[in-house]
Image (tube, rainbow, N blue to C red; front, side, top):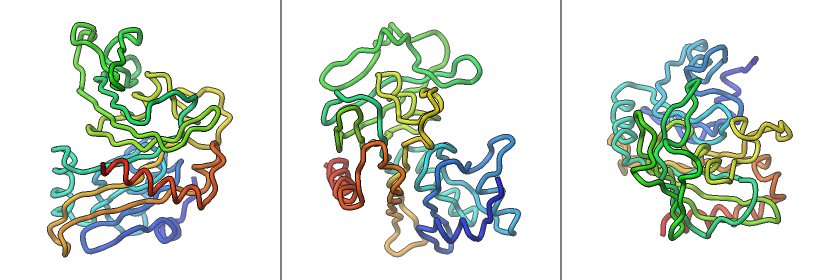
Length: 255
């Protein structure tokens, strides 16, 4: 993929200061470390700019990604992700309807064959009670598993699809994608679970991020990446309605 870093940087810039660079990443570009692929960190380095990823979002995911420009800032921010004190919010368009207004997916993850992330229990053992999806301890598969929790609020229902605002309490690899697919609501266009290949992108977007940042006045980073028009295509939402849904989603997640 032939990408000009200076153009990508200028087009996607959300925030920049002495310590960090925040971008609204398009779907289809890696952040760092994917084999046989050009990524943001590599593109920047080739242009003489050293960046340290504070967190990762999947190549297929669009939206907010935060990179540190210096190591002290990187250390301060990554500690917040490790301690789960960073606040994160995503948007997703999922296939089918029927989800409640609010819910919690409390399903541990494990790594299966070919390094694929899965729920750490048989699919048929997943239970629902009071809008919470969970498995009993006795149903967990043998081997290592990782507690994983995703909260969600429903923003819009159409005849066949639903728009969700999601808050991953934990930050496991592929967490939102696996959680939604395993409870029967895969993300539209997700190559892990949608094999039809009919969608040009995966409709998952890194939307909001909040952390403390000691070098800023006031000492906070509170950022939002508005999704592009292409995100809303599967539900036929225009700019004005999209703005209203984002306002609604922010209020629901703050409540």
